[in-house]
Amino acid sequence: MYMIHRGVIFPTNSHDEESLDYAENRFQVWDEDIFNVTYPKSGTTWMQQILTLIHSNGDPTLSRSVPSWERVPWIEQRTAHGYLETRPSPRLITSHLPVQFFPKSLFHSKAKVIYTARNPKDTFVSLYHFYNMSGFLEDPGATQDFLNKFLSGEVIYGSWFDHLRGWLGVKDKVNLLFITYEELLQDPRGSVIKVCNFIGKKLDDKAIDSVVENSSFKSMKENQMTNYSLVPDSIMNQKKSPFMRKGICGDWKNYFTVAESEHFDVVYHEKMRNLDISFTWDKN
Ligand code: A3P
Image (tube, rainbow, N blue to C red):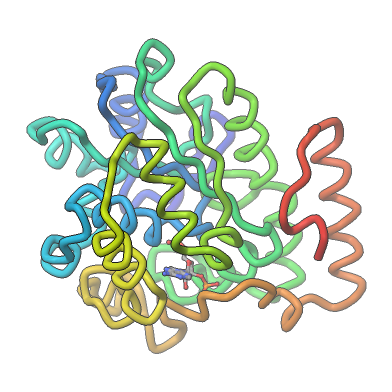
Protein backbone atom coordinates (compact mmCIF):
# COMPACT_ATOMS: atom_id res chain seq x y z
CA MET A 1 0.00 0.00 0.00
CA TYR A 2 2.83 2.39 0.91
CA MET A 3 6.52 2.82 0.36
CA ILE A 4 8.89 5.14 2.18
CA HIS A 5 11.23 7.02 -0.08
CA ARG A 6 13.95 8.99 1.73
CA GLY A 7 11.64 9.42 4.70
CA VAL A 8 8.48 10.33 2.80
CA ILE A 9 5.42 8.09 2.35
CA PHE A 10 4.19 7.41 -1.20
CA PRO A 11 1.22 5.25 -2.22
CA THR A 12 2.40 2.20 -4.19
CA ASN A 13 -0.70 2.04 -6.40
CA SER A 14 0.87 4.70 -8.61
CA HIS A 15 4.50 5.10 -7.48
CA ASP A 16 7.58 2.94 -7.15
CA GLU A 17 11.32 3.53 -6.79
CA GLU A 18 11.66 3.49 -10.55
CA SER A 19 9.00 6.16 -11.14
CA LEU A 20 10.46 8.41 -8.43
CA ASP A 21 13.96 7.96 -9.83
CA TYR A 22 12.69 8.72 -13.32
CA ALA A 23 11.09 11.95 -12.10
CA GLU A 24 14.08 13.12 -10.11
CA ASN A 25 17.01 12.03 -12.22
CA ARG A 26 16.01 11.23 -15.75
CA PHE A 27 13.09 13.44 -16.69
CA GLN A 28 14.25 16.32 -18.85
CA VAL A 29 12.47 19.56 -18.05
CA TRP A 30 12.01 21.83 -21.05
CA ASP A 31 12.01 25.62 -20.83
CA GLU A 32 8.40 25.76 -22.00
CA ASP A 33 7.10 23.26 -19.41
CA ILE A 34 4.43 24.48 -16.99
CA PHE A 35 4.20 22.69 -13.64
CA ASN A 36 1.18 22.49 -11.37
CA VAL A 37 2.70 21.73 -7.97
CA THR A 38 0.64 21.10 -4.86
CA TYR A 39 0.53 19.27 -1.59
CA PRO A 40 -2.42 16.81 -1.95
CA LYS A 41 -5.93 18.22 -1.54
CA SER A 42 -4.89 21.80 -2.12
CA GLY A 43 -6.55 22.39 -5.49
CA THR A 44 -4.53 20.13 -7.82
CA THR A 45 -7.45 19.06 -10.01
CA TRP A 46 -8.74 22.61 -10.08
CA MET A 47 -5.42 23.95 -11.39
CA GLN A 48 -5.23 21.06 -13.90
CA GLN A 49 -8.57 22.25 -15.24
CA ILE A 50 -7.63 25.94 -15.27
CA LEU A 51 -4.37 25.24 -17.10
CA THR A 52 -6.02 22.99 -19.69
CA LEU A 53 -8.64 25.62 -20.41
CA ILE A 54 -6.13 28.46 -20.64
CA HIS A 55 -3.98 26.35 -22.92
CA SER A 56 -6.94 25.70 -25.23
CA ASN A 57 -7.94 29.40 -25.25
CA GLY A 58 -11.11 28.72 -23.26
CA ASP A 59 -12.35 25.92 -25.54
CA PRO A 60 -13.77 23.31 -23.13
CA THR A 61 -13.67 20.37 -25.58
CA LEU A 62 -10.49 18.75 -24.24
CA SER A 63 -11.44 19.39 -20.63
CA ARG A 64 -14.70 17.52 -21.21
CA SER A 65 -13.30 14.61 -23.18
CA VAL A 66 -9.96 13.64 -21.64
CA PRO A 67 -9.46 12.89 -17.92
CA SER A 68 -7.59 15.53 -15.96
CA TRP A 69 -4.79 13.09 -15.04
CA GLU A 70 -4.03 12.51 -18.71
CA ARG A 71 -4.16 16.17 -19.71
CA VAL A 72 -1.91 17.37 -16.90
CA PRO A 73 -0.21 14.16 -15.72
CA TRP A 74 1.77 13.58 -12.56
CA ILE A 75 5.47 13.38 -13.23
CA GLU A 76 6.17 11.03 -10.31
CA GLN A 77 3.62 8.39 -11.25
CA ARG A 78 4.38 5.25 -13.22
CA THR A 79 2.38 6.53 -16.19
CA ALA A 80 4.53 9.67 -16.61
CA HIS A 81 6.79 8.70 -19.50
CA GLY A 82 3.93 7.37 -21.57
CA TYR A 83 2.00 10.59 -21.20
CA LEU A 84 4.80 13.11 -21.33
CA GLU A 85 7.67 12.10 -23.56
CA THR A 86 5.84 12.38 -26.83
CA ARG A 87 3.79 15.43 -25.94
CA PRO A 88 4.37 18.68 -27.79
CA SER A 89 5.48 21.77 -25.92
CA PRO A 90 4.26 23.52 -23.83
CA ARG A 91 3.61 20.51 -21.62
CA LEU A 92 1.30 20.87 -18.64
CA ILE A 93 2.59 18.71 -15.80
CA THR A 94 1.34 18.02 -12.27
CA SER A 95 3.36 17.06 -9.22
CA HIS A 96 2.89 16.53 -5.52
CA LEU A 97 6.61 16.03 -5.05
CA PRO A 98 8.39 17.75 -2.20
CA VAL A 99 11.05 19.95 -3.80
CA GLN A 100 13.98 17.66 -2.92
CA PHE A 101 12.51 14.93 -5.16
CA PHE A 102 11.69 17.19 -8.09
CA PRO A 103 13.43 16.75 -11.47
CA LYS A 104 16.94 18.10 -11.03
CA SER A 105 16.79 19.55 -14.53
CA LEU A 106 14.17 22.09 -13.35
CA PHE A 107 16.95 24.09 -11.76
CA HIS A 108 18.73 24.56 -15.08
CA SER A 109 15.61 25.53 -16.98
CA LYS A 110 13.25 28.44 -17.48
CA ALA A 111 10.21 26.23 -16.84
CA LYS A 112 7.34 27.77 -14.90
CA VAL A 113 6.02 26.41 -11.64
CA ILE A 114 2.62 27.29 -10.19
CA TYR A 115 2.52 26.30 -6.54
CA THR A 116 -1.00 26.21 -5.10
CA ALA A 117 -1.30 26.07 -1.32
CA ARG A 118 -4.38 25.76 0.88
CA ASN A 119 -5.18 26.45 4.50
CA PRO A 120 -3.61 23.40 6.15
CA LYS A 121 -6.65 22.86 8.37
CA ASP A 122 -8.91 22.56 5.33
CA THR A 123 -6.26 20.49 3.57
CA PHE A 124 -6.28 18.15 6.54
CA VAL A 125 -10.09 17.76 6.45
CA SER A 126 -10.05 17.09 2.73
CA LEU A 127 -7.21 14.57 3.11
CA TYR A 128 -9.05 12.81 5.91
CA HIS A 129 -12.04 12.25 3.62
CA PHE A 130 -9.76 11.23 0.78
CA TYR A 131 -8.11 8.56 2.94
CA ASN A 132 -11.57 7.39 3.91
CA MET A 133 -12.81 6.93 0.35
CA SER A 134 -9.59 5.66 -1.25
CA GLY A 135 -9.18 1.89 -1.48
CA PHE A 136 -5.41 2.32 -1.84
CA LEU A 137 -4.95 4.22 1.42
CA GLU A 138 -5.37 2.96 4.96
CA ASP A 139 -8.44 3.77 7.01
CA PRO A 140 -7.60 7.13 8.62
CA GLY A 141 -9.16 6.09 11.96
CA ALA A 142 -10.28 8.73 14.42
CA THR A 143 -9.76 12.35 13.33
CA GLN A 144 -7.58 13.01 16.38
CA ASP A 145 -5.19 10.17 15.42
CA PHE A 146 -5.09 11.25 11.82
CA LEU A 147 -4.45 14.83 12.90
CA ASN A 148 -1.37 13.70 14.82
CA LYS A 149 -0.14 11.88 11.72
CA PHE A 150 -0.77 14.93 9.56
CA LEU A 151 1.11 17.21 11.94
CA SER A 152 4.08 14.87 12.08
CA GLY A 153 4.15 14.27 8.32
CA GLU A 154 3.20 10.58 8.50
CA VAL A 155 0.84 10.91 5.55
CA ILE A 156 1.29 10.59 1.80
CA TYR A 157 3.80 13.07 0.37
CA GLY A 158 5.02 13.86 3.85
CA SER A 159 4.68 16.96 5.95
CA TRP A 160 2.53 19.84 4.71
CA PHE A 161 4.95 22.22 6.45
CA ASP A 162 8.06 20.76 4.83
CA HIS A 163 6.37 20.76 1.43
CA LEU A 164 5.45 24.42 1.60
CA ARG A 165 8.73 25.52 3.18
CA GLY A 166 10.73 23.49 0.69
CA TRP A 167 9.03 25.08 -2.30
CA LEU A 168 9.10 28.59 -0.88
CA GLY A 169 12.80 28.04 -0.27
CA VAL A 170 13.50 27.81 -4.01
CA LYS A 171 11.29 30.71 -5.07
CA ASP A 172 14.29 32.78 -6.08
CA LYS A 173 15.93 29.93 -7.97
CA VAL A 174 12.99 28.92 -10.17
CA ASN A 175 10.28 30.71 -12.04
CA LEU A 176 7.53 30.29 -9.44
CA LEU A 177 4.03 31.68 -8.98
CA PHE A 178 2.63 31.16 -5.50
CA ILE A 179 -1.15 31.11 -5.38
CA THR A 180 -3.68 29.86 -2.86
CA TYR A 181 -6.88 27.86 -2.98
CA GLU A 182 -8.50 30.65 -1.00
CA GLU A 183 -7.52 33.22 -3.64
CA LEU A 184 -8.86 31.00 -6.42
CA LEU A 185 -12.16 30.71 -4.60
CA GLN A 186 -12.44 34.37 -3.68
CA ASP A 187 -11.46 35.79 -7.03
CA PRO A 188 -11.62 33.13 -9.76
CA ARG A 189 -11.41 35.58 -12.64
CA GLY A 190 -8.53 37.57 -11.14
CA SER A 191 -6.73 34.29 -10.43
CA VAL A 192 -7.16 33.07 -14.01
CA ILE A 193 -5.76 36.37 -15.30
CA LYS A 194 -2.84 36.06 -12.87
CA VAL A 195 -2.05 32.56 -14.17
CA CYS A 196 -2.38 33.77 -17.79
CA ASN A 197 0.05 36.60 -17.12
CA PHE A 198 2.50 34.27 -15.45
CA ILE A 199 2.54 31.76 -18.28
CA GLY A 200 2.50 34.48 -20.91
CA LYS A 201 -0.84 33.64 -22.46
CA LYS A 202 -3.22 36.36 -23.68
CA LEU A 203 -6.91 35.46 -23.63
CA ASP A 204 -9.84 37.69 -24.58
CA ASP A 205 -12.70 38.29 -22.12
CA LYS A 206 -14.89 35.59 -23.62
CA ALA A 207 -12.15 32.99 -23.30
CA ILE A 208 -11.49 34.03 -19.70
CA ASP A 209 -15.23 33.70 -18.96
CA SER A 210 -15.13 30.18 -20.34
CA VAL A 211 -12.08 29.23 -18.24
CA VAL A 212 -13.83 30.52 -15.11
CA GLU A 213 -17.13 28.82 -15.92
CA ASN A 214 -15.64 25.45 -16.84
CA SER A 215 -13.41 25.38 -13.77
CA SER A 216 -16.15 26.23 -11.26
CA PHE A 217 -16.81 23.67 -8.54
CA LYS A 218 -20.28 22.97 -9.95
CA SER A 219 -19.01 22.39 -13.45
CA MET A 220 -16.11 20.20 -12.29
CA LYS A 221 -18.36 18.18 -10.01
CA GLU A 222 -20.56 17.36 -13.00
CA ASN A 223 -17.69 16.78 -15.42
CA GLN A 224 -16.75 13.09 -15.59
CA MET A 225 -13.26 14.09 -16.71
CA THR A 226 -12.60 15.93 -13.45
CA ASN A 227 -14.82 14.29 -10.82
CA TYR A 228 -12.98 10.94 -10.81
CA SER A 229 -16.18 9.00 -11.52
CA LEU A 230 -14.20 7.11 -14.21
CA VAL A 231 -12.17 5.49 -11.44
CA PRO A 232 -13.71 2.26 -10.06
CA ASP A 233 -15.24 2.18 -6.56
CA SER A 234 -12.50 -0.17 -5.38
CA ILE A 235 -9.99 2.66 -5.89
CA MET A 236 -12.15 5.64 -4.98
CA ASN A 237 -15.45 4.94 -3.33
CA GLN A 238 -17.41 8.11 -3.89
CA LYS A 239 -20.36 6.74 -1.96
CA LYS A 240 -18.20 7.19 1.14
CA SER A 241 -17.14 10.70 0.16
CA PRO A 242 -17.23 12.36 -3.25
CA PHE A 243 -13.93 13.49 -4.75
CA MET A 244 -15.53 16.87 -5.40
CA ARG A 245 -16.65 17.02 -1.80
CA LYS A 246 -17.50 20.58 -0.69
CA GLY A 247 -15.10 22.94 -2.41
CA ILE A 248 -15.24 25.60 0.30
CA CYS A 249 -12.96 27.43 2.72
CA GLY A 250 -13.27 26.98 6.45
CA ASP A 251 -14.83 23.51 6.56
CA TRP A 252 -12.24 22.71 9.26
CA LYS A 253 -14.48 24.59 11.71
CA ASN A 254 -16.98 21.73 11.39
CA TYR A 255 -14.35 19.15 12.36
CA PHE A 256 -11.84 20.61 14.81
CA THR A 257 -12.57 20.88 18.50
CA VAL A 258 -11.28 24.06 20.17
CA ALA A 259 -8.46 22.04 21.74
CA GLU A 260 -7.47 20.48 18.39
CA SER A 261 -7.46 23.86 16.69
CA GLU A 262 -5.31 25.35 19.45
CA HIS A 263 -2.89 22.44 19.30
CA PHE A 264 -2.73 22.79 15.51
CA ASP A 265 -1.93 26.50 15.87
CA VAL A 266 0.90 25.81 18.30
CA VAL A 267 2.47 23.27 15.91
CA TYR A 268 1.83 25.57 12.94
CA HIS A 269 3.64 28.51 14.56
CA GLU A 270 6.54 26.34 15.57
CA LYS A 271 6.93 24.77 12.12
CA MET A 272 6.45 28.03 10.24
CA ARG A 273 8.88 29.93 12.45
CA ASN A 274 11.09 32.50 10.70
CA LEU A 275 9.10 32.34 7.50
CA ASP A 276 8.66 35.93 6.55
CA ILE A 277 5.33 35.58 4.72
CA SER A 278 1.77 35.95 5.88
CA PHE A 279 -0.87 33.69 4.39
CA THR A 280 -4.57 34.30 3.77
CA TRP A 281 -5.45 31.65 6.34
CA ASP A 282 -3.34 33.23 9.09
CA LYS A 283 -6.23 35.65 9.70
CA ASN A 284 -8.87 32.95 10.26
P1 A3P B 1 -12.75 19.37 -0.41
O1 A3P B 1 -12.50 17.94 -0.04
O2 A3P B 1 -12.47 20.30 0.73
O3 A3P B 1 -14.10 19.59 -1.00
P2 A3P B 1 -6.99 18.00 -5.04
O4 A3P B 1 -7.48 18.19 -6.42
O5 A3P B 1 -5.70 18.67 -4.73
O6 A3P B 1 -7.02 16.56 -4.64
O7 A3P B 1 -8.00 18.77 -4.06
C1 A3P B 1 -9.32 18.35 -3.91
C2 A3P B 1 -10.05 19.44 -3.15
O8 A3P B 1 -10.24 20.56 -4.05
C3 A3P B 1 -11.43 18.99 -2.71
O9 A3P B 1 -11.69 19.76 -1.53
C4 A3P B 1 -12.28 19.45 -3.89
O10 A3P B 1 -13.64 19.56 -3.61
C5 A3P B 1 -11.64 20.81 -4.16
N1 A3P B 1 -11.92 21.34 -5.51
C6 A3P B 1 -11.71 20.75 -6.70
N2 A3P B 1 -12.12 21.54 -7.70
C7 A3P B 1 -12.60 22.67 -7.13
C8 A3P B 1 -13.19 23.88 -7.64
N3 A3P B 1 -13.37 24.07 -8.93
N4 A3P B 1 -13.57 24.81 -6.75
C9 A3P B 1 -13.40 24.64 -5.43
N5 A3P B 1 -12.85 23.52 -4.88
C10 A3P B 1 -12.46 22.55 -5.73
